[in-house]
Image (cartoon, rainbow, N blue to C red; front, side, top):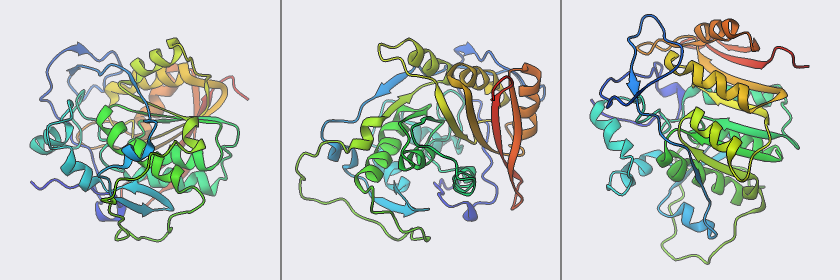
Length: 326
């Protein structure tokens, strides 16, 4: 089976994650189990904060940039090739290729792809004119970080990015944020210009300090519960988030408890979560209706559908808030 990273939703109608069982047992997931799925035990990665180097050009070394939906992002096929050299401890690319799976629970959680619901949520944020100015924002399960970059361009006060895998944060998220901050004001062509590839310069560039907007950003890898604990107990504790943006993070019912508790711990009292999801994830068991039922049973949050996308497999944008919020 050929392995492909697909960035454009119209080229892959299924885009359904495939569950994979070949993980080393470590500790049980503590959360809600879909009765259709056997309980799986996985090692959850510890939380880690990642830092932009003083010379931001280092983040973009050996990267090729493309543009889509008005944003710059790294060509992931190039990232795939460079990450197969054995220098990355996680080795998620070769593991994903060898297992023929975009998801390996506890090992790799899909951050090397831009999933189609991300574009749905970006469209909604624009259509609904969601305001980011002076707000603190978390891009949860960020992958490429496009949602957080949209918030950053909307003059958010702070934007934090979290993905399960450190390789994703270092090789994709951080380069994308740097590229968009460096090119702030030079908006990428909004048309489908996937051929607009910018090869890296072979000349060594002068050391360059981080653009001002990058100082608003923090980057984290690890499991949701672990990152929450790090954020709340670190020497630089963060304020709770006015907005949490997350896309295609409810595919696995085993993770619902950790996600729910993370939202409860990190969302500001009157904050909002915008979550994009497919109605169902075949082979894994999760989906929009199942997660809404889970929220109802926990009685902490209220949720409402703010957008439906009927093309292909039905997709939804949910707005989630505390029951006692205004």
